[in-house]
Length: 505
Ligand code: F6P
Image (tube, rainbow, N blue to C red; front, side, top):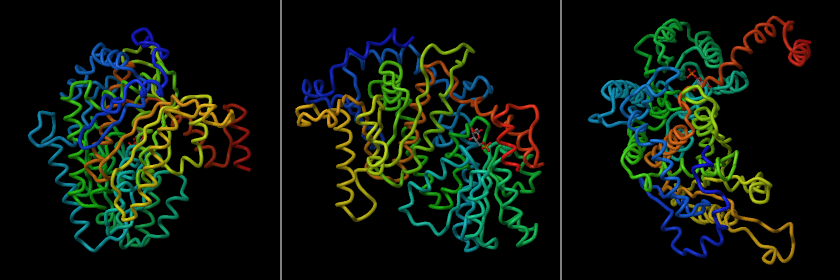
């Protein structure tokens, strides 16, 4: 149990006191890498605890496991696969396996992107995918939306056809490129959306239109060919790329089409530099390791079941959705790599929304609720607009929220009104990017990826499979079959059958 190897939470004075005792706490507990500042000083740790956490990283052999990942060892044990999303952004002369293959594929899909951008054939890009084949590219396109793009992008993920029908109303088949992104090319939602979109295309232009208007991003060449997309319009990636870690591969084609190859390369470069930092920095300077260790401290010693991410930048409004999959699909498990059941609590529930909006919805609970919710604030020192007063107001609110969570307000300061007492002592990290450019975004995403890796090793998990998503898919099949036939399952529970009767009536 981690509680046996770490000091108790009670060993940490209130944040008010630790800051009063050490005026240089910010200097002692903030770090910088890839131009990004990570201020951990409002985390509830002392130097003694910090040292104990660093010892935990050594005891759990983070360094050894990191070396195994970058060397391409099959650490995804249940699927007998390597975990090499780092190869997707590695330099050509890197020692990481498969970089030559990666660069060859990257050149192909970036050339394709540039051809789409230089032709005047397309106005709309319909991106069909779900989970890791959607969240990453969609998030990056939104995050860099201050950049010019000549295209209207439509991301379709849900099998609920309301999104697809709404998008198709805005598109002209003659000027629409359909990108079908699916690692397996078997995911029900994606394949159903793809068939409906392709029918829309061919009804208007004939089946020959598929050749020029459809692109497939997948590992499954046979399924792509069976679907009717030719090899010259298929871009592949390897099975050692996890879906939630795949935006760096050809799955990122929507990014390259939107903003060009140079921006996509900047995104990769930011992630590459964070990879190098993760590989080489001593653990007391290593930002992803420290993010992971502090997350373990909050999860396993402070007993916090949730972890909140508050981007104070509206362009990062999809960032939390992406990190939800990266974190919760990786570490939302209780069975360890060796098949045993974990002894400790594992992956936290990740949620959050942009500030300042969150201040007007759920921050009441975060400030005065009965549970402590550790927070990552993310902000950019410089905006990509000219309204400096807006930006000052935005950042002031972010800083104030972090202060209020940490230091609270005493009864005296609240004028004797109990309802205005803020206990404070609520931990947060402030992550400050110089500005929201592709490089900084790539570094930020990679930092979170490696935080999740670090925590998975500490908890003894295989962070790279997702068995928990399979049962729902299996149970849905007979229900879908029955509902499409207008009937009800006989051999099921009374709730499901009762609801099916209502749906089918
Ligand atoms: O949620 C399960 C999952 O397999 C994710 O891991 C994956 O990103 C998503 O479904 C989509 O899978 P695919 O890219 O194969 O369509």
